[in-house]
Amino acid sequence: MPGGKERELRRRIGSIQSTKKITRAMELIAATRVVKAMQRANAARPYARLITSVIEDLAAGGAEVNHPLLRQADEIRNVGFIIITGDRGLAGAYNTSVIRTAERQVMGHVAEGKGYSLCCVGRKSASYFRFRNYRIDHAMSGFSDNPSYDDARRIAETVSESFLSEAVDQVELIYTEFVSMGTQRVVVRRFLPLVDTEMMAQEGKGTGREGSFEFEPSPEAVLEALLPRYTEARLYGALLDAAASEHANRQRAMKAATDNAEELITKLSRAMNQARQDAITTEIMEIVGGAEALSGGDASDVEAALASMLTGTDASELTTAGAGGRPA
Amino acid sequence: MAVELDVELVSPEEVTYSGSAEMVIVRTVEEGDIAFQAGHVPFLGVLAPWSVDVLRPGGERDTFAVHRGFVEVSHNKVTILSDVSEAAGEIDVTRAEAARQRASEALSADVDDAGAAAALERAELRLRVAAA
Image 1: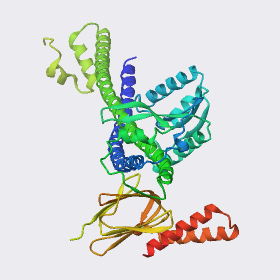
Image 2: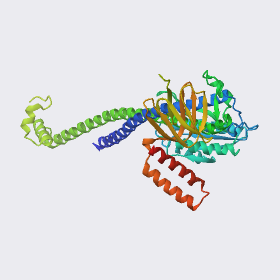
Image 3: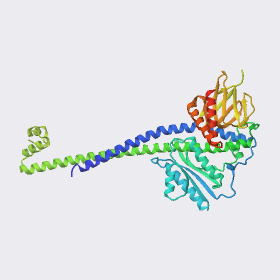
Image 4: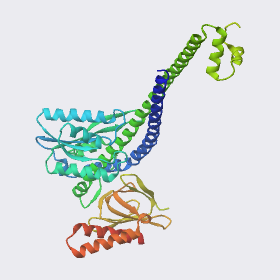
């Protein structure tokens, strides 16, 4: 049926156009959010740096390293995992690459005969692992876009609790590190036990400060109050990095989707134009054929009939205007 | 000219305050106030839920309510690390008043309510700092 194909294509172009509008909007939103997320990550850096330097000073001041958060288990029986993904999809490979890394890690530890305990941050990781019948001990979501320090505190407290109660002997943190706008990579970091303070002091550049600090109440008490804050600050940093990475990934994915939609629209428009042309040609052919059959082969009659059918005007006009190369 | 201290109040989200001061007064968990002036020996302490006063060179005074945190002093620089702190201007007095009301009612009902006691302490600190 002529025109059927054209209508079909026109409908498809329409739907792709509205999809394109959506992906374009998401791209622009992600672009502004990634900038904000980067600013937040940068603003949070001084606190993390200072808290590390305080620990270095404590180490220099000779604090006794004997805090439960530093407990090195003789034998690792259970490993905890904090898996940070987003709440929403449409962010390219962002969620899947974190999940895949996490699953490999979990499998590796299970193969060594250890138990696991999952703490899923973000709806995507929780639904993935729940669907595959992993045991999820903690799941938190609803803030992957814009994490607050309170969120970090909640996660850190939950995880520290299970570490302190010896439910797990080691905790790994799996998230996406934001290196730059163009580069984000999934990393696996040891979260607990904290590496001991002397190692931290060596890792840090030592700052060249004299180690003659006065402590109040005592180096140990300061350290004890400090370590929980340190875990929170680390987790907060990871959440902010993950949020910035998520937005950057979403922006890239949506840009690709918009470009694809554009390309598809161009292709379909060409096909549609051709279909319309075909339909018109077919219609003319039918009319010509019909008129010719009616008049019994008289050329001028055919032209008159064709003209009146096409335009509804007087036949003589058309014959002079251009009867298609036929000599009068 | 007197040497001044650099003061920074840093929260996990951002650097909330930075400036110079003649003196900084804090209270540590040992239940003692301690004031820092330029040239103080390196010091590291755990802060009690109390106010932090920054005396500016011009004679002004900036007051903060710090509910939890640390103070580090070295090289004429005072850094206050706190995950829960507010400047005097940011405090919502009516809300703090309501919170105090609620907490003291809860305390009179149950003297051992640790949560209410802490809430009362927080509310009173807020009101005191806001009034300063």
